[in-house]
Image (cartoon, rainbow, N blue to C red; front, side, top):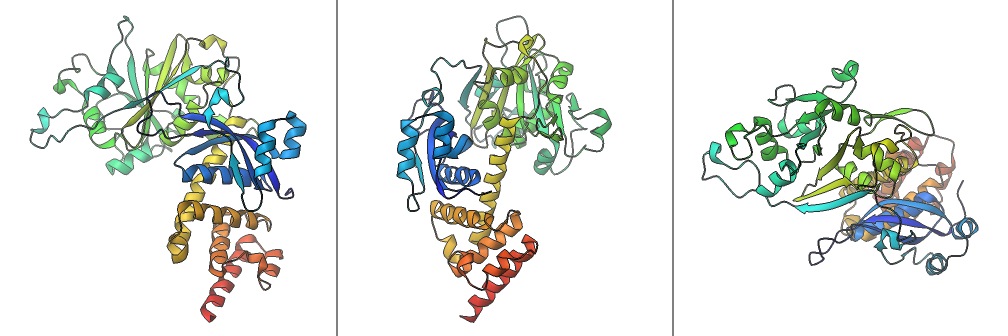
Length: 442
């Protein structure tokens, strides 16, 4: 059921991009309060997400999102929320408070942090076309230190890769994980491994053989190919730990197929995709149970390294405040995961829809990204009044709206179609056909 349009407020976690002159320690995860003139939770998150995208930021999640009066009834008097709510209306539909490091935006400064997130800039290898292939460097010194350097302690660190077979095949052109000179094992159950061979995640032991640090001839061919062709292609994440391959397999296998808390259904959790890994895992910093579940094993700890498509690598490591013995239950796909994926899926569709409409409407394609996002957000909110929620139906509805240049329900011939009991795909297809015919008659 839709609420009457009014000021909705909530708390938001936003992943920011630091300016070039900002210090390396700049906090990437920032929190703020937001107010949006809307009538649904989806309208709130969409408006904040579009606002963030226009500034090069990324909305990780929004929580405690309610109409202002509902919010105050639940949480009590709050000056910042009240002032923000006063600033939004039909003409100015969004307002955000100052972005602040997460604990300054409503959490106690003493809130424990259980994960450490660091960013590393890795320069690319220089042009080596003047050298024979066997004399070329296979990895930069900075990346070699990050992935393979050994600590002073006597317990050696091992390096693993969790790679998506489908994403890797897009780069290599063929499935080749069964033809490598390093240990490789599918992360799905043995009885499903063959059926899911081409799309499953795989655990690869990338620990350097003894003597390979300074001797290229000792480096496995898998490593040379990976850092030449697959690095920064977004095919997987890397792990550093003292645990052996069997222990690491058991640990990360548990997250591949997970049970949903509310419905008890089972689903595949693509945590090894860097587009999911960093925003999801880095947001667990203040969640002791989740941090412990992901980053500790019996007798071991793990660090997860997430390569970006640029020259950045994010390293997420546990602090000394958590230990494996603190785990009280197995991992379940809960509210925080559900919220993350709903936001992530909506963001992907929004980007696809903007490109789709830009290809089909010349005037729309000339608008700024921010203007496009605002127009489409209003169209989508309007479409939901008529229970239009399927992606193709939304796309047809939006294209029709742009053709006539006004809300579709203001077109007398269209509104009866929208109100009919026909399937939403049929209704939007008929509406789009009508609008195209009307434009051609002008």
